[in-house]
Length: 433
Image (tube, rainbow, N blue to C red; front, side, top):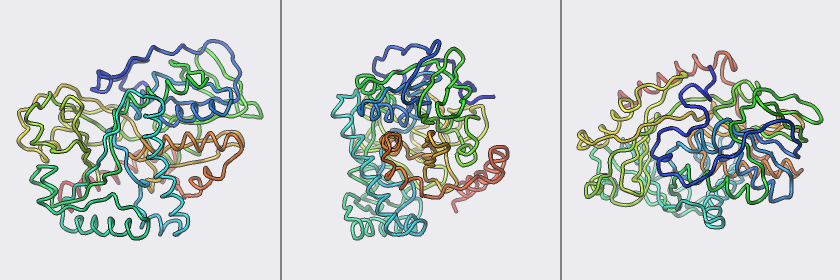
């Protein structure tokens, strides 16, 4: 079974709050027959759309192929959080790649966050960047780690936007009884993720990129002039960019062995009205310290958008039941609240949670596996892919130098082995370890 079609209708957005409140965007035409391009991009999420925009701005002829609609995958379904830094904290990166490279990775991540803000502004996108992400800690040891992290970032990286919060200060912003404290990053933020993807698509087409929807790629003929084949057409090109993330399927075994699709879920409540102050007292997003992260924020019409729970098979579970349980653990007083929307999506993770940047053929590049940290990093990935395609690969190579190991068993056995590992960590969450 193909994840592209396991839980969704062909060519339609899921029945999510984001889809119900998306900006107008007429469907792009299918690809029919043969065409020629300098670059063919496979995947119409943040990575592919950003690459298309930046390549078109360089004057290159770009064709982007999306199996469903732009922003159909994780780019249009996620929690909308635009975090600071890489997926790993800087002390972990320093151990992994050394101090100098860790500093380069921090600079790239800050550029990524700034890109989201500037692209929204420069292209008058149909979404707003709201500042603030709070990190909620379940234990006193996690609060101490949060404080030490903020001190390190200010001391070693000059980043002073993180404010540490004791229990009372944290509950003044996030009035839940279960957290011991945490911090808030005032320079991070959150957006309407699907409208951001739509904004990228409009910007890319305005720059000259050609986008085709309903164009499911099933084969790539590699060579000096690759040919990308869909059900109804094909693209001959000089370069290919794989921007498929969790929907790569069998298009490339090198990436598939290192990037694992998993499913995550969100519910949207009825509008809270005056009760919103009992959930959040500032318009910030929140993520907690569980291994299977709970994350939430308020929508522009004061609904609670709460994400949590994971699955590792093809079919989604009962989403309301899956997500309501952690929501009520955080906010038990919401037990009678109506759930108006429930949706799932497929993202992609790597073994060490750092994205996988790879040159899989001399003229084929890939970036994916953002591990829940993709709104900003996937946007930056598109710029780095464009630079590398144009022959300026230095910054792409910085990201590609971060080791991303194969999952045990490779593409064939990665799923059952991952399920065992994730089940162990989920049990630790339930037991409070």
